[in-house]
Structure formats: C-alpha cells, structure tokens
Length: 249
Image (cartoon, rainbow, N blue to C red; front, side, top):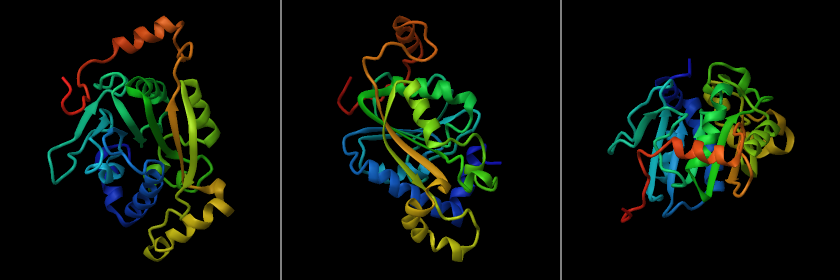
C-alpha cells in the first residue's frame, strides 16, 4: 500500500491527506515564496504540492518513477507528468531552477541515483527541497499513510546524505505535528499542533523538510573515482528532454 501513484492519489483525496497537503504546502511556500520565471521539477509524487506554482513558474513538470507508476495531472489541462527511470532523468543538465522531491527518497536503494541526478539537472543557482518522513515521528510508525512506508530519515541523516552528494543544506524545518488520525474533529486542530509543535514536541514531527543548494567546484562526487569520472557519468546520462525557457532554441 502507498507504493503506487494511484494509492498516493487516494490518500491525498482523503480528509487526512488534504490536511497534510495544506500544512506541507505552506512550509514549501515559505521557502519558495516566488517562483516567477523559474523552471520547476517535481520528482516522486510531488503533484499535490506543485499545483500552486502552475500559474507562477515559467514551467512545471512532474516525473514519477516507473516502479511507482504515474497518473494524469493536472486534470483540467494538458498532462505535465512523465514516468521515468529515476537513475536517468530525461532532463537536460543544469536546466532546473527548483526541484521538489516528495515520496521519492523513502527507499535507500534509490537514494544514490536520485541525488546524483538531482545534482546534475539543477542549475548553478538552483534549489532543492526534500520532504521525507521523520524517523522519530508518529506518522512514520503508522502504515495507514504514505509517510509510514519506506525508509524514514532523521534530520542529521538527511543533511549528511546531501553533503555526500555535493549539496549544501540551507534551511531545515519540521512539520506535520497533528497525529495521523482519521478523526475529523482532531484534524480540525491541525493548525494548533503546527504552531505549538516546533516549541514543545519537535522530535515527533511527522515530516522533515530540508532545502539545499548545489555545491560547485568540489572535487569528486560520491562513488566516482575522480572528477573526470564524475563528469563522464553526468555526460553519459542524459540528453533527451531539455527544459528550455520560452524562446530558447
């Protein structure tokens, strides 16, 4: 359950899912208050959090891993979703300004490929946001939500993984303090939980959110034997679907 796109869509269509979506959207927007003129990419199952940027960013695209499957989105317009191999994203190098990863890093086996490809596709001034279940949070202990599946991460683990793959952690937030209940009454108190949670029960947040920038001029990417090997790897993997700005050839 919650390993397929259709299951994730059903969760976000539920009352509990809509509450989680609203809370997490607010945190993402606080980090990216203005995306006008930027090229934005969502990876994993990011579509619940991309919609606010559709009328603002220059371009918005969602990529869903093939093992997860894909859904059509947005329903009211032409499709902006593609199903991909997460190890070889069909996106041009240095072409993305904002990259949002949600329900994408929960399996350790895909961590290497996703972070390598994220570094490659981001522009020099690009920013990355990763949203993952918190290891000590209640949501990670309940398998009736997508945050209870896959591998949860502590903030320290997430920071270290990003550094290993040449990212610079910038801002870290904890979110989703309301318990993962189906009680409508309890869910109506979510704003209170979100306000008081960081002060009193920070360690039990459901989700860790971290924004990072791309580190440049470093020596070697993890797993590459030399800077030349790292560059060869980046060149080898990707030329097919450039995210060019309007008017570019």
